[in-house]
Amino acid sequence: MNSPRAYVEIDLTALASNINKLRSGSSAKFLAVVKANAYGHGLIPIARAAVGNGADYLGTALVSEAIAIRDAGINSKILAWLISPGDEIEPALQKNIELSTGSLEVLKEIENVGVKLGITPVIHIEVDTGMSRGGFLDQWEELLKYLPSAKVKVIGLWSHFARADEPDRPETKQQIEKFAKYEKELLEIGITPEFTHLSNSAGILGFKEAHRSIIRGGIGMYGLSPDYQNLGSENSLGLKPVMKIYGKLALVKKVRAGSQVGYGGIKTLERDSILGVVALGYSDGLFRASQPTVGGNFKGSFAPLVGRISMDQCVVDLTDCPPANSGEYICMLGEEYCMAQDWAQAANTINYEIVTRVPPRLPRIIK
Ligand SMILES: *Cc1c(COP(=O)(O)O)cnc(C)c1O
Image (cartoon, rainbow, N blue to C red; front, side, top):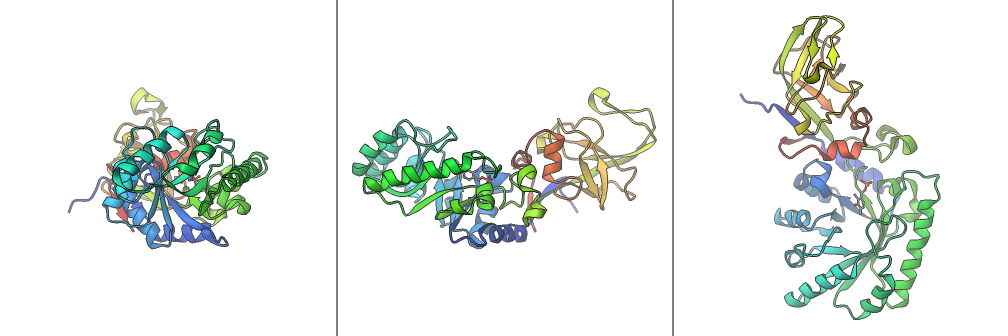
């Protein structure tokens, strides 16, 4: 009877509920963002479940991610938006993947591959409305001259919000206005994209006027809040976390007061303690920088981290928990005391980074 030393549990019922929540009251199509191994949740099962629960589009950053989705037999509309010169455009066009571009260089490369294959590429034009990351900005006028004769079909015009998680700031409204200006100029040269889109999860939740024809749901679809401070917890937003991580207690033992725990001996036990060695470490995505304000949830009780997190293991304090035996599992992510937000706070980062860094080596178990 083997059992994994640690595993990621994926709750597809929660995923479906989150999709419904994000799209409720919106007539826009829903694009499920599945980049970066579906934010660490597992690309193919999440892509398949999202489409099965009504997502109209899948969105990836990389072309290779979009190709992997096609190769798994998923036939929905797919948009890949981070295209650099020299990327694998040929298989993307052959597999009916829509590509985004924010530069003339990439636009021309896509066009040339299309001509070679006898395929009209379907593209989304990205415009920079104030984030100064991707999207047309200085080449916009040149694009307007070039586009009418380009051998591509422009199906989308889109942009991305920089600060939609801060509803009280003026930048998002300014981005919405700039977007409308780009749209108008595109219409003036006779190009009417079927879709316009600019809302991420924070935009979906906070800026209904910016839903346009597609909303792009990432972190919210995984049941996490885009910003605790300004938008509130996932609970208050009606979202349900999709990911939990369990690790096996490799060893449970009594350790005397005064003992130092782990590399660097950064923790000296103040009392006789029951410690659990959990088979999960920083190579599994746990941030080594985490403070002991976080830890595991063992049968409903808090088991705080003790000492430094090692590569494949960490130590938790089980003294105040129900009796534990080696071989039992402890939840290390996704329950009270160990929500992604708790880990994020403990490591001075954001919940996005906590889930996204969980590596493929941990098995994903679909619930
Ligand atoms: C990652 C990403 C999203 C999703 O953002 P969330 O904040 O996770 O909802 C949407 N659009 C683009 C272009 C992205 O890169």
